[in-house]
Length: 249
Ligand SMILES: Nc1ccn([C@@H]2O[C@@H]3COP(=O)(O)O[C@H]3[C@H]2O)c(=O)n1
Image (cartoon, rainbow, N blue to C red):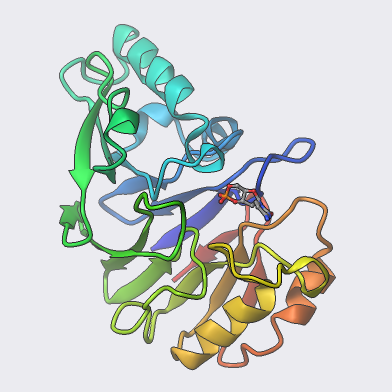
C-alpha cells in the first residue's frame, strides 16, 4: 500500500495548502480518504481524478469535505468527455448521519452515496476497510478507518479526542495516521475532540504501532516542533504530514 498526503491542515488551508485528504493506493484500488479544501488540485498531481475507485469520508466537518462538490463536477465532466464510464458513479462511503449532509452525495451519474455505520465492512479491490467511531463532534459520528491489504495495515484516525476506544483497532498497525491538532503551547485544558501531537505519539506507542504519521496540523506549525513533541513514539519512524509526502508499506 502507498499513502500520499494530499492535505493535512486544519482548520483552513494555509497559502498553497490543503485540509485533510489522503490517497491510498494498492495494485487494485485507488481510494481518496477525506476530501478537504485544496485536495482535488493535489490529487491531480498524482493521478487523473477520473481513475478514483472510491471516496471515503470520516465525517462532515468542512475541513474534511470542502472539495466534494468540485470532485462531483469534475467526474461529471470526465464522463461527458468519455474518460470515465457514464454508468460508473464514484461510490462515496460516508456516515449515515446527519441525514441532511448525505443528501448531496449522490449527484447525477457522477457519484453515489453509500451509508457507513460503525459495523460496516467494505472490500474495495484488494483492500478491506473497517470502521471505529471516534470521540469527535457534537453527537454526529466520525469514523476512523482501518485499511488492510497485502498483509499490511493502515489506520486513519480521522478526528479523534482522547475518549476514543482504540483497543482492537489500531494495535500493531504498520502505519497510524493520527491527528495532532495541538502543540503543547495551544493545547486546550479541556479535551475538545482532538489530540495534541504529544498525545498522538503516546497513543501510537501504547498501541504498538510500527510507524506514525502525525496530521491535522495548523499550517503555521514548524515541522521540528511537531517531530520534537512526538518524542514518545520510539517504536519506528515518525513523519510530520506535509503535502506530497508518500509512505510505502
Ligand atoms: N478550540 C478549537 C476549536 C477548533 N479548532 C480547529 O477548528 C477545526 C474545526 O474542524 P475540526 O476538523 O474539528 O478541526 C478543528 C480545529 O482544527 C481548534 O484548533 N481549536
